[in-house]
Amino acid sequence: MEDQIAPATFALRPASDVMRLARMGSAHQTRLSFMRGLLRSLRREGWGFDRPIWNIDDAGVGHAVYRAIGPRRSYSLVAFAHDLPDEMRSDRVIATAWDATFALFDGTPTAEDITRLSQNVPKQEAGRISDRELSLSRANRSVRLWSHVVDRLAVGEQPDEEQLEAVGYLMRTTAVYGSGKFGAADRAVLAGRTVMSGPFRAEMLAVWLIRSFSLDLVEHMARIRGGDRAVRIEPQMRRRLGIGNSTGLGMAPFLINHPALLNAWMTARETAIARVRALPAADKQAKAHFMACVAGATRNVEGWHSEHPLQREKLAALRDDLDQLNAHLATDPLAQSQPWDALLYWSEGALSTEGQEQVVALILEPYGDLVDDLCADMATDENACARIEGTMTVGALRTLIAQKYNWATAIDHAPTDHCARFWYVSEEKLEPRLGQRHEEPGAEREEPLDISRAIAALDSALVDDGNATLLADFLMRNPDHRHAVRRVQIAVSRPYSEIRDNLIDAAMLPIDILRCKLAFFGATRFDPRSDRWVRICLYRNAPFPEELANMPEDSWAYP
Picture (cartoon, rainbow, N blue to C red):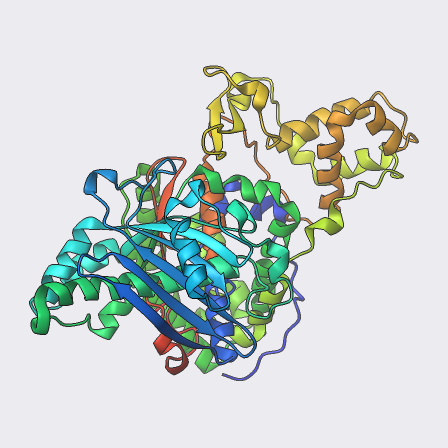
């Protein structure tokens, strides 16, 4: 494909559409997703990988070290395998034991480091790690598939493809902590490191190496049982196994609490879309690449299942959407001028929101040379917008609220259903939770995540001051409004910084917030188990470390 050079001459999609939960909760992974950006960076920089330690016994207990070796630095996943009784296996955050626990170490650990980690990592929250560690995580086996794979490999047979397809992973992580939590290195430690400078790169590296460990461990257990008869999983089938993840409510407040970062992620994605929409034509190679990705997306949705009623409805719509997309493409719409803009315009009238966002993701696939550079814009200095500009006048702030937050002031927060929830942090696990305001105690401990209500309250409070009053003077008398004032000032130059819905409404679905964040990670096959937690798959079809240099770059998202 010829190099494409096109600035974002098209207007970006308006925040009034993009930042609604219904659309955010229909997001799909793209070329800009963090795990895809990570693997591209590792490949382009020529990173090498090895497994210097494999100290796992016949019961599947012990430790191993997986190392990523770069031009200037190395990182090591230290993995601990445990003998976990079935009755102790749980995806819930209150669990105290797991099938495997992990830490991503900055460099190559010594024997003393491994001893220290062995005394703390298996305890997870009850232990402590140091600033030599970049992440802390744990995982449980998918028990039925694990047993099936061990049984088959032990007798020299490959696993059943339908069972592999139905689950998609052998282990499922239940938390991947980083950024200073439990003693790990602060995010600032990674600033400026080429491969690690993007959002959540350390966590995504850890998960990718955990995937290798899960496959190596299941093959190890098959060899223990079957001896010389045992075989490894065939490479193509092996790649179809990703790493699972169970993610709950604890992840949801992140996007609310990091408005500048959310804006950076969204702006990068929307700029990529605008660049592709601006292209005057699609060449033969781009069309072929796009059609292949549509076929891959169609196959993917055939194997994507969920028991959650809302997700089942969305999946049925997506399957119908892809049928309509394939029928539309048969009329050769990509032959016209500005074909990608025309295709998105068509999708907005013909497809569900889920289908529209799938098309958005697909049109980026042929144009890595045009959009991949935007990965570098997805980190931001959040400290730069922490300071309140106290010399702004009340009149200027009221004008900004009218311009940027008319969606918030239009909400009537008085009805019971419109203020039905409250966000709080649990005392036991220090994890975010949602309470029912009119049914449960604890609203006095509410976290400031009710953004629309806070902005509306600020707007009402400003009425009592003259337009010439300085914000510094207003806030001296009304310090409770500092948080809302800061949000408004952040939004001045960051249109995608706010979720434009009432986050304490009875109808609000936290899984929509989770879906948006996880799509930026690169997650697939979203399977909500309630309105507050979801199972996903990461790195499905991706190369393993030993394959990275030899597989075509970024060829795995829609195989």
